[in-house]
Image 1 (cartoon, rainbow over the protein chains, first blue to last red):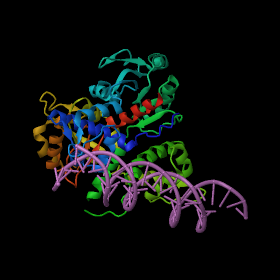
Image 2 (cartoon, rainbow over the protein chains, first blue to last red):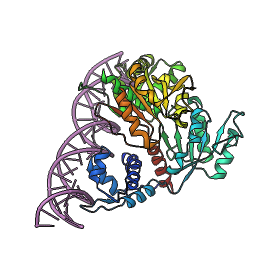
Image 3 (cartoon, each protein chain N blue to C red):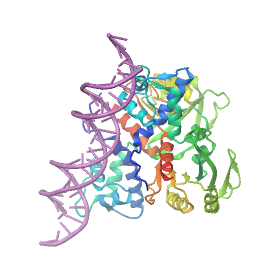
Image 4 (cartoon, rainbow over the protein chains, first blue to last red):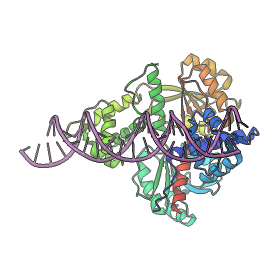
Length: 211
Length: 211
DNA sequence: TAGATTGTTAATCGATTAACAATC
DNA sequence: TAGATTGTTAATCGATTAACAATC
């Protein structure tokens, strides 16, 4: 693997979508230029942090003027890969799986779930939000033929590792995992855990500190 | 507010649910004692980190033996507040809102969404997973009467700040925000953002580094 | 010009990891 | 006992923030 010397830090990367949302809002209001100071204030961030993040997008700010909004939008969109859409498959068409399949918003994040899989025959061969649900037995064939690189796991915890293995075997390189289990994967595969329990832990802790 | 000198760190707190899942698995396999070394290995963590985290639960390990599984489960459950369930309201009964309302798993995380709100009359006064949907105009009355402290926001981005203000006005102390906007709140209110776009950014970056 | 704002270097902070003595 | 494992202190690391010169 390439060492990627100036790879962007994970926290910085996670902030990028926030900047993008904010910049779209501003653009909508007719704003053409904006300073890191203002962005920092409105998003509750440190201004130096914002400047360093924006530097990572390649946009150069002008003293007194700030940054060109359109340029920032363009470069962050590029940085986040929202242009070249990624196709993905989803496994596990339960409540959550259905919700994700139906969600229209992913398109603007460069994610396109093209097909889904489940073992429940009664769901198979139906369409949800225009996306066909196949029987799990078809997964290897379809994923490799369509050259899919992202797998979304929305199966129960106990099945998640098996599905994960299956996805990797089929050629998937990145996994978005909604099951509350730690998945074992080879070094070159990325697992991004969507961690509702962790979020709730923080909420709960906050309330505990209240009284 | 109390200064809370030995408040647990956020990263450590986020790891707790992972330990808990893992420990339940082990308990299920009949394991009664487990070492930090083994946990670390299986969850891809540093063993010292695990020991420090476990120390925070108050459980004392025994050299050569490790930690008592049941004791850990008990203390982490307590630490995460999974016992004393928190009641919550949800605002915005769209696809995502419905999925969250229908999800049975939150109960075991100590979260109990008791009612939902929407402005769409055609959804109001119906029930989803046994939870009644009320018109938004009822929110203040209900939240304060039921003494709800958590609000879940699943409305479109453009309405999120208004809903947030409304929730806080009604007495909510913590907000779980699924809308892709930065919410402005007073210091004493916690916002926990559930940040799908950020997760996707990391996935996308990984794939970009691939080729 | 004066002053706001940028971009960069240095200091700080918090979390992780390494080293190691204590203990069962 | 010997050796695995704990718990703690010290070193490292990465990210954030402070300080400040450069610039429009």
